[in-house]
Every structure is written in C-alpha cells, then in structure tokens.
Amino acid sequence: MKIGLIAMSGVRVKSAELAALGVTLPGFINRGKVIASLPSLGLLTVAALTPHGHEVDYQEIVEPEEAALLTDYDLVGISALTARIDAAYSVAAAFRNRGIKVVMGGLHVSALPEEALQHCDAVVTGGAEGAWPRVVQDAAAGNLQRRYDGARARVFEPALYQMPRFDFLAGRSYNRVTVQTSRGCPRACEFCASSPQITTAFNQKPVSVAIEEIREARRYFSQPFFEFADDNTFLNKTWGREFLRGLRREEIRWFTETDASVADDPELCRLIGESGCRQVLIGMESPRPGDLAAVDPLGWKQRRADGYLRLIDTLQSLGVSVNGCFIVGLDHHTPDIFPELLDFVRMSGLAEVQFTVTTPFPGTSLHRRLKQEGRLLTDRYWDACTLFDVIYQPRGMSVTELEQGLQWLFREAYSSEATAARKRSFAAQVRAAVARDSGLSSQP
Image: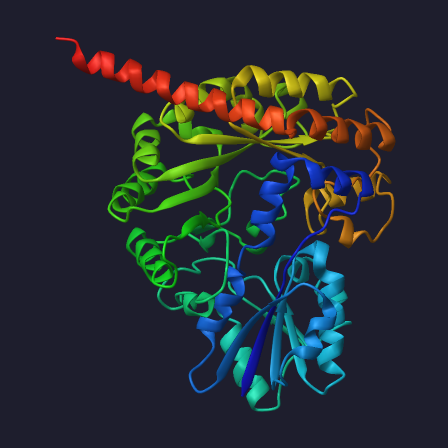
C-alpha cells in the first residue's frame, strides 16, 4: 500500500485584537512561529512503526484545500491539535470522497474518539505503538476496524519502540527539530492536555536511545536546534544527570520544558548549562501561591511557588534563559492579577515570558469541571483552543476584563522595548555570574 501521513500545521489565534498585536510585538510572535513550524514527531513515529513492504509519504499542510494537491493513497493517517481538528476533518472528508480510507489519531482523537469516528474510517487512541502495525495489516487485508487502542505505558521498550523517521525531514525548513526523551507526567495539573492524556504511567526513554535519536536527527540538518518534546524532561533527576553528561559530547543547542524542582539539584543545573541548553520553559502559572490550589489538586505547584526567584537566578546565572509560563484567568484571579504579574516578570529578571489564558481542552479535568459548573461559553469551541482565546466564564472577572487584561499584558511585556530590556538584563546577569565565578576561582 501507499500510505500518506498528514500533519495539520499552523495554529491561529481567533481574537482579532491579539492577532493584530502579533503583527507588531516580536516577543509574542516569536514563540508562535516556533510552535507552528515544529514537525509532527508523532507521525514520524507512525512512519517508523509501519510494517515493511509499504510506501510511506509524510506531508504537512496548513489549509484543507492543499489535500487536493496530494497524490492518491491507499490509506491516509491524519493527526492534528484540537485547534486544527476541524481542518483535519475537512482533509479527511476530501480523501474519503476519493475513496481513500482515513485513520485519525492524536490527543484530540484520543479524548473524543466517537466524534472523530464521524469523520474517518478508524481511530487510534493512546499511542501509535502497539496499534499502527495492526491498522496497516488490517487495511491491507480489507478488514479495517473502527477503533484501535494503542499502548499507554512502556512505549519505549524494545517490543514497542521504533526510532522516528527523521529522514522525512531532510530538505525541509524548521526553526527546531524535535526529539522526545519521555512521555507523560505525574503532576496531575487539571489543565494539562498533553501526553498524560494518553499515558497511564511516566515513560522514560533510555539515555542511549535518546542520544542515538539526536545523532540520527542531526544527520539531516547542518546546525539543528533541538526541542525536547517532553512534558517534563528532568522529572527523573538521576536519568537527567546521565543524559546531560552524554549530551555534552554532542555539542548541540537545545530547548526543553520541565518543572521547578530542577533547582533542587545544583549538579543537574550545572550540566544543563554545560550541555548546550539555551532556554528552559517552566510552568509557573501564577506568582501567587494561593492561586494554584485549583490548578494542581496535589498541591505540588503551590508548594513550589515561593522558590521561583531562586529557580530563575540559578539557571540564568548559568547562561540558561528561563521562559516563565503564566496562565491568566485562574479561579482566584481578579483584574489586579495583570499589573501584579507584570511587576513579577520585571522584578524576577525573567529572560522570556509566556502568557496564556486558561483553556479547557477536551478530555482534561478542567474541561469536565467547567462544563459541570456551567461556565463554558459554548459546548464546541475546538478552533479557539489556541491558549489565547477566552472560551469560558472566569470566576473573578468578566470575559471582557480577561480579554482586555491579556491584551494589556501583551502590549506591555512583548513590545520591542520590553523584549530588548529582558535580553539586556539576562546578558548582564550572565556577565555578573561569570565575573563572580572568576573572582572566586582566582582566590588563593
């Protein structure tokens, strides 16, 4: 069979005001461009899981109309983020109208398989591992089933694991190349719509396998910048130290996301700086510990909030910029959160900052709670799951106040002047740390 794997790229904010701001605010638009241009690591893994004897084609499209330009396939696999799922359904319809069987998978499909089955011939829930080979075999035999449940644990063990087909990226232009070192996270944040939705356990890739993937991916790019597509890269500190020691020898530049506990391990932080890390994104959510109770039922984030300043200073003194990620519109937030949050960003010395709005993705605990409380503005809002569009009724302010407060934050924090000031402050912090360390090393 000839199999087409189609990734839906490009997430667009729906708010006209925020879209207009994005034209002029470099700090806002930069991260958006990076995210929009990331390859689909999931579909590259699907390609690798395809049994031998079948031809595989990997494509990324933005507009559904582009599907008409693609060749005919015997089977099509489609993956998309929630914000692009309606476009993905349109693409599925275009192929099915040509008599081509369509299989859909990913986070949204795993959360709402019955919805997806209205638009395709079969769905894969959970990971592609343990499911996709059966999909291909059944399709080739003309016996495609409606639903396949993939693995949710032990996905990196030899019986299930296949290295992603990074060769499909050769000749393409990306801001960053993605490699996954783990899947899942035990923190239980109620808003999380990432891989914990398709896992039942934290899956850690062996260090040797992760390094091998990095080496394979870099074969197809002259100077790749890597992004580790993990929910929490350094959850396992022992693994992290071993991984970073190996990473030092690879001489790459990289970015990842992890949690505030990274500051508990000075050696780990030192190795992060020594191994080519340029930035770490930390989900801080709010500078006020009391705001975090509903976000994390286990109370982990609330206990960590008082250590944010130490975390920022620890990593940035090592030359690693911290991208603090904050959510506005939490249940304890009132309009005074906006100036307070801006003050914290300026006072903390954060090199980068990301503001998002509370977003109840389908399948999350947050979605279930807000629906039960009758606070969703509409039942179906998938194209507004951009992290910047307001799709629920906040508890401590009006929808308009939340929208205007987010716009104000963007104007204040993402202007050319504010973005440049953060860069200068970070550079000065690094120089001061180097001077301090040099002074200590020269003492008798």
